[in-house]
Image (cartoon, protein in one colour):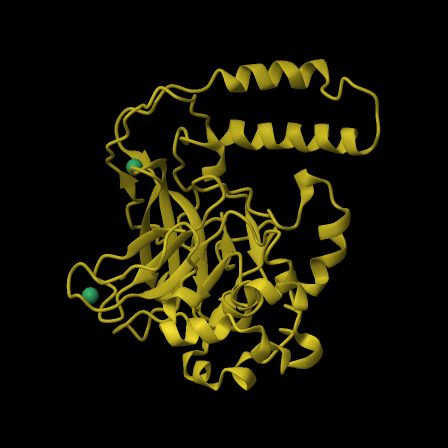
Length: 348
Ligand SMILES: [Zn+2]
Ligand SMILES: [Zn+2]
């Protein structure tokens, strides 16, 4: 299986040669629901975790906001199964009621929730990436590390889950932990990633327009420059030519490693290491969606038919079923000087 981003409609460096030195490689991860093993790169799959190493727990604080019930991982999965079955009946045109009586009873039992957890919470596997699948992954100063593992505590700290990163040499793990602890509950169902396999693909990215100089930003807004590109240019963007650049040519949507920071919730801000002050690099983008209505040009060729025909509940744009901060992304940045320096979590 593979995922292929359609070629960009324009080689942006042919019109704006000053962008050429800013080209960066990003690896789109293209998560797809599956059954990953601890030896696969995955989202939401089991980790290759040393059997003799303690599993990480989060000490909180986890303070109940009184706004919603918390659900167990098993109940979230059951709720997803029921909702997928109901959506399939609805899409198939069967008459209501679309829930069976058993499903309705289960939904009621699930929605009553679980007790708010007392004490430390087991962290949840979010992603595991092997360098053989994502070659651009490198732990600064640790040439042996070929495996990045990301876990999170599925409670807000204070606005999103708190992440923990582990770099490992996979060759040193002879005995992998068979039974991996799980949190008793999650603050939101959207914090539980569906197990997914990855079909990584390298693409070229350029900075968000707001990270360019004022002069370059002005040039990007000039449709006469873009018209020189010929048929690849879409004149519907004539009144906002820089949007053409932003949506189609700068940063890829969805899960990715490396590349440029995506901005959307706020304007760009400095991302400096809290230990040494070095500018930090984008490491991993954990995305709520693989694309949205402004980034459809990035839909992989293999997904285009499903993206048109699938019901909302089975959209290939939402394979992980994650939902962060109402549809935004959590972008992890790391200090290029040392993997020991704390990473940065950015919601955009
Ligand atoms: Zn926590
Ligand atoms: Zn640093």
